[in-house]
Length: 291
Ligand code: ATP
Ligand code: MG
Ligand code: MG
Image (cartoon, rainbow, N blue to C red; front, side, top):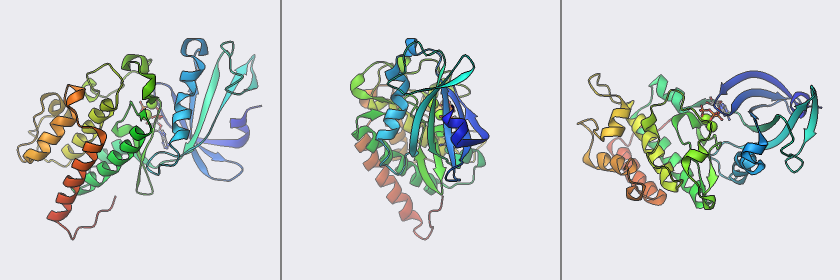
């Protein structure tokens, strides 16, 4: 028996990452579409059940926040001797050969990465998006979690609403640990390595750096100057376009500071963002923000 095959019709593949594949599915019972992440677990013995269920546990604990990809349910299936066998997380043991974790989530329309590729948005709209990301991050941190993999590929949109997703590397901060352990198995596909913070320890400040990269990427996409270096050079060298205000340059430099202790806290970041949002509204009050 496979719950996945029984309950869902697989429509197409949305994308694959280091840990698994995300597919678009139709639920046969409610006729709605969902995104289901299939995580093939190589060896429970190696990872431990706790690490394997971390993503579902964290995502389900954040379901009250509207700017986070909604979680519906998660379950395990394993296929032994060619036959599907039911297994619950309690029943899962290190003897299970190749269990697969299914995570049913709301289906989002596109990612911030795709929106940046289209290049249609204005600076004001990007500030509006970043304000939502910052507020949402504050909520995640207030609950004691760090995201650990905040990037333009993991920020989604649904009906014009911002949705932070992919909690595959998230963790409860009290667990401590270091980033290398969290990033087990992840190959940073085509992203420049500079997009990740330089430190090894897990902390809220790790997410602040990643937020800084997102803001810089959004703002740099609005600059039309062929002579300028790509954004990752700006990240590395903290050299921003000459037309940018001093305040903005300082803010970006603080988010991207090499030393995590020198980066602002999440609430400091939120209040600074509020000021930038206000000032960009002030310049052109008549323009309505649509994204
Ligand atoms: P990546 O390295 O790209 O972050 P990953 O292994 O971390 O990959 P996910 O980010 O969870 O895996 O998902 C892989 C891809 O599936 C994403 O890049 C995205 O395009 C798509 N995707 C994930 N979740 C959703 C969703 N809820 N709705 C729509 N598409 C999604
Ligand atoms: Mg991802
Ligand atoms: Mg991931």
